[in-house]
Image 1: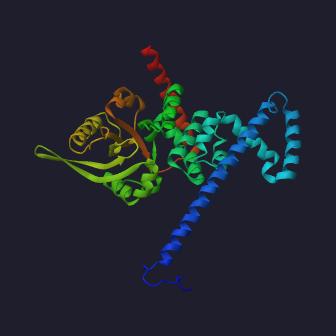
Image 2: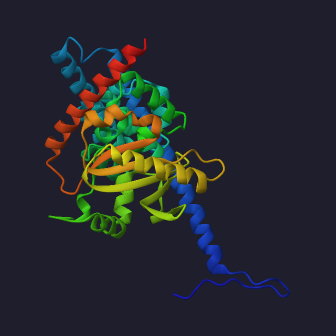
Image 3: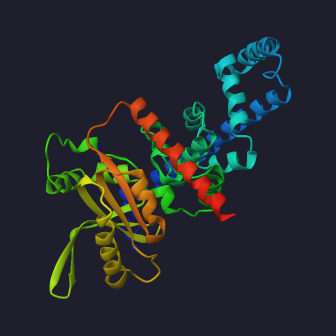
Length: 356
């Protein structure tokens, strides 16, 4: 098909009809996308309000059988008039939606980036703090539904430092996230799932580093949104000696450099001194105006929780995390993480008690 042309009056500038057509198409697609976004948000808010209205009748509390009959009758009438989107199972999901997300103001803020299918993925999560975490991270990082499901199945919440705090601290951090503030507890994971690197049997730190660089895109996805790769084997000259940091990243939400050291062995307290040295050098020579001080992540084969706790690393801007090159069964990983979270929360509660 030939490109469209426009008649050109004498003495006028030539018009690029193809470029103009492309621009007009872009304007139409953009407008349609905005209309669809608004329509989806309104539809989801309608579902929330329907669920909220049904909740006010207490159809699901204290009179289960009666409530089920009423809901069944309502759904039959609504389906006949408005279609299958208001079936019995759909109405029960709307009720659950309004029950779990009780604050309309928060729902409205989430609707800027979350659709009904996002909320359907969130409803089965039993832990209310985990549910809030996924909802807020989904809003901030604008995950599509597929990514949200992957993050949930990859037990992302349980692997964040945030999940190991007391409930009061977690709620405060979620409020910070709603206000646009992201903290290291939101960013760093433990363990990191590096099964995609394909490392098996015996391998060296060099092999691990090369595999990460080869699979940088997937490694960045595992690190989380906001990370940008800066350097490999970052050279640091101090006096007559040169030192080399394995990997250097920058996190745009934290506005700080992130130094990563890879360790094949178990975590050793001596690793902290090395990382502190690197962070001081980066702070002096690489930190740009307006940035926060650098933060370090020591990725090791395994780490003793009591040793890490004793070192009180939060004040040193250093994190320690394990990496898994072979992914265990999800249930085994989940149970192990819940055990670690329980221990960490007990220790946090004791520290809070001692501080009173």
